[in-house]
Every structure is written in C-alpha cells, then in structure tokens.
Length: 515
Image (cartoon, rainbow, N blue to C red):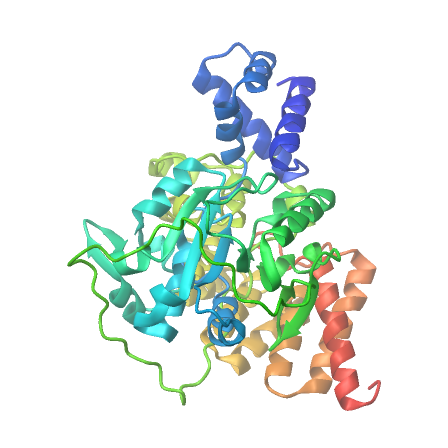
C-alpha cells in the first residue's frame, strides 16, 4: 500500500478522533485500511481516502477498528473497590441535596467497566444504589455500545469475578451470562467522541470520571485537550480515575494527582462549591422492569476476611518492546483449523495476547499445542491467558510445563511469580522473581515486583534496594532488554520510574534516613 495515502488517512483520523499511529498502531492502521478497502470493494487507498473525506460513518467505522475493545469485569479491581469503598462514601457525605452521584465511564467498550462499577456499588449500598447513583457510559464504537446494552457476556469476560458474585448478578442461558435487569437499569449508554464530548441532558456534571486504558491511544497534546474538556464537565472536587499504567501520562497539570492506599487518582483542583447539587434536568427515570430482576439477598463479605490480592499484576506491554516486532496484528477471525493455527506466525499470536485479545488467541494457542505439546512459547502464552481468566491451577501447570522444557527460562520463572502474586502467595511469588533476577540481572520487571512484595511484607530496606535496582537498570538500558520477549511486560518504563522514585521518596521520609 502506498505510504502517501495511508499517511493522509492517518492524519484525517487523528484530526477527527485524536488517535495516533506510531509503532504497532501504525501497522494496525495499515491492516484496518486494507480490510476496509476490501469490504468497500475499492480500487486502492487513494479511492478510500476520497471516501473518508466525505463519509463520517466510514471514518467512525475505521476508527472503531483501530482500538482494542477486549475487556472484562473488574479490570484493575483494586481501583474499583477503592472507589466504591473509600472515595464514593466521601463524596456522598459531602453532598447535601440528595441527588444521585453521577459517574462517567469514558471509553466503556462492551460495558464491563460501568457494570463492574454498578455491581461494586450494589455490593456496598444494596437496594439504595439506584437512588444514590447514576452511571453514564460512552464509547465511540456503535457496535460496542450495542453489545453493552445487550449485557450478554461469555466466559472470557469474567476473569475478575468469583463464582458467588457471578451467580448473584447474572443469569446463565444458552452458553452466555446475561446481566440482571436491576443492574442494567443503573447504567445508561451514549456515543462519545472524547475530542467532542457531548452527554445526554441531565447526566452531567459528573462527580467521578473513569477513563481507563483510553489515553494510551492519544499523544500528549490531545490528552491535555481531553482532560480540559472533561474538567469542564465535572463538579468542583470531582475525581478522575485512569488506568494504573496511565498515571504519569495524564499528570499534565489539569487535575491534581493524589496517592492514597498505594493507588493514584486525580482530583478536580477547584474548591468544592458550597451550594446544593445541580438538579437533574430531563433525566429519564431508570426503573427495574416491573416484576423482573428483583435484587437477591446480599451476602456481605465479613470484615475480618483477609484483603484480596491486587488483581492484574501485568497486562499491557511496554511500547518499546512492541515496536520491535514486525507484521500486522491479526484481525478478528473465526477459530482457525488446527493446521492453520499451528503454522500461524508466532509474532501475530504474541500480538493478539499483548493486545489482550484472549478470546481470539486461546483457540490458536490450543491448536499449536495440539500440533506440538513441547511448544515453549505456546505454553507460556496459554499460561498467561489462563492467569487472566483466574484459572490458576491451569496457568501454573502450563507455566511449569514451559519451565520443564527450558529450565533457564526467565519468562517461565517470571510468569510463575505473577501467578503466585495474584493468588496472594507472596513468599512463593518472591522466590520465583528472585530466580528470574538470578537468571537475568537486567530483568527490571522482576526487580519491580520484588520491591512491591517486600513492601507488602514490611521489608522496607529490601524494597528500597529493589526499587533502586530498577532505576539503575532503566538508566542503563533505557527500559529495553528486560529478558522477556514473549509475555506482555505490563509495565511501562516511564510509569515504573515514576512509581519507584515516589515510593523511595516516601519510604525515606518515613524512615528519616537515606539508607
């Protein structure tokens, strides 16, 4: 495909939707444009560019294919729990007029995030939830919004939901899980282009905005523009929650960065107004359909229960590692025959896993293992997918299988550390990460996880030592070459540097020394 029309297409989409196309995103653009040219039966990229210039629906269709839509319930669950259990009660206490607390889920994809928020609120506030909260969810993609409104999900959407919670909020039929009506009634959906935010009447201003795993698609100037627009749609004192790996990218002076309980969020810098909340104007009442979806009895989690381990220890790869790969990301497709999957280019399969397209990747990984049970890379990828589905025994068995085939595999040791960390087995996790470091001293992701584990266990000196090692390795290697080539690292060097420096500074202040 000629570069000139492709560049012009990229510029057009950037101007309209703010997306940028560097590294892997550039290859995704080329792949998506080729598919749309074929679908529209056009002669080439120049003809397609002419079509885009006059067809807003086609521009939107192309943009929808340029972002990763795969998500799941309770992604980065520790954030959701912290918002529901700590931040929301504060905001409710500050409200004086009894109006619902308004929450926005920006970039909601197929609905798992806003529905997770609703479930977390039902868990805490039970029958009062519909009166206390109003959740608006927006996305650019019309097909994703249609799926969200349908609220029907497969097994892959439940990597962060235990069986008891799933049974309480979902009905299983026809091989799918359908969210119950009383939860769906709390969430309303709308089309949302973050460069031109417009919300249904009466839904704004918002008290809390979730914009997670969205800003990764935008360059700095566009992120600032989006943050400024959102600030205008938020109440003074409102809160912005971004993805764990997006904290630094959104610390642009528009909102104030706040750290609490080891988590970060942003606060609207304006002084909270003393007056009452703005009354809802024209907002449709959201009621549970008559006779349907009555709330089941709630089973409260005992306060003496041990805290759950932080979920999702590593998911999204560092962009530098991604840019080293070649070839387009594999497009959505039906499960391939075993003989096709077995010969699938490994970089394409790795790309699917790095993009969190696990539902597409799983049958392809399985087919590779059927063809060759000794396939080390397929064992690692299969273990990683199983980990993200919370099938811990399955993940551990596959990771140990990879280790049996290569006893010197840094990635197998690293992955076993992630599995044990996710399960809350901190001592065992630390041992796996130590072995990964022994095999490759430059593996800064393993050092970083070790530091976090040491801190959780109260070993502050050891934690400081690990975080300093991370900073030294990042300085020496510029964030590259951590010894992990197949699995997603899930840690961006800039974010890791920020966290290590902040944690070192905090611990030094607490200890009163530089040791």
